[in-house]
Image (cartoon, rainbow, N blue to C red; front, side, top):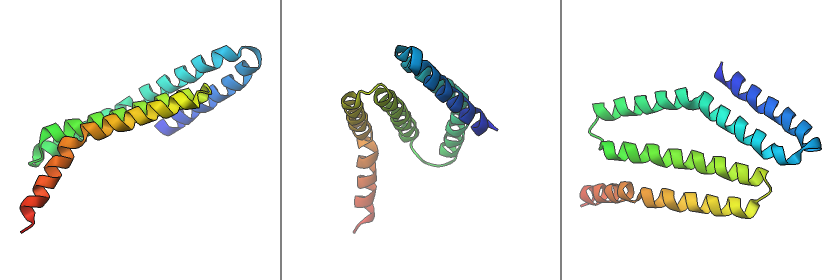
Length: 128
């Protein structure tokens, strides 16, 4: 099961961080980054399966493929932003974490404007 691998990587990284923090606190960030990257690699297969499923469903319907691509990009930005925010908070840089979080939200909103506009056009067409 993949979740056991992910939890194992997380717990091993936690143990290493606790030990390393006593002797070389400057290396804690590197261990945290390595664990995060390893976990991302472990979930890439699942992410690929989700994207394939969404693409298949999109091809079977009349959905605009541009919207699917936008949704996948928005989801990726949300994941990467959360990852960066977590690393900033782990480093004790809460102010930078908040700025990265705000930046990610603004980019997500700006990317979702075409979807919102299309939805509003559809609603206007339905209303009498």
